Image 1: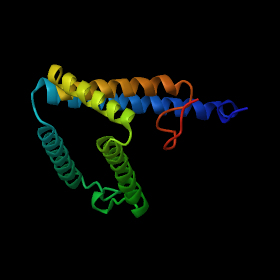
Image 2 (image 1 turned 180 degrees about the horizontal axis):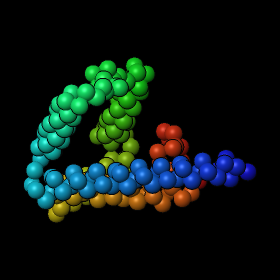
Image 3 (image 1 turned 135 degrees about the vertical axis):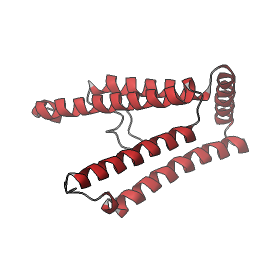
Length: 170
């Protein structure tokens, strides 16, 4: 008997959490796509718009709380992440960049002919696709496919975000 059949309530909550993550990611991606593709704006413009909205919202809330004499229980200036979390984020980023660099180095040296051909075909395909469709549209399509795969896999309980590095689906 698996853990999922022993505790059905927990499995349903995890499934709904995965579905919520996928829907939230899809909505966020849709907003970014609308801002960058339809408005012909850059990611820097999006980032500055988000920061302006957050800053003005926090300023208005601060003034409102001060006028109403409401004490704020959590001071945002005291928010911190642990050193382990920061090291984990940097290590994952370094591993990803290192793996990509290793694949490209092996392909460029020509030691593995099949890998070289695969890399050349993928790069040619991406270059041709980039001439036809904008990069933002390609990124949004990839995000949509990723969210759909998360939704489909959440029904089986074997989700992308719950797997460890290198773990393969059965």
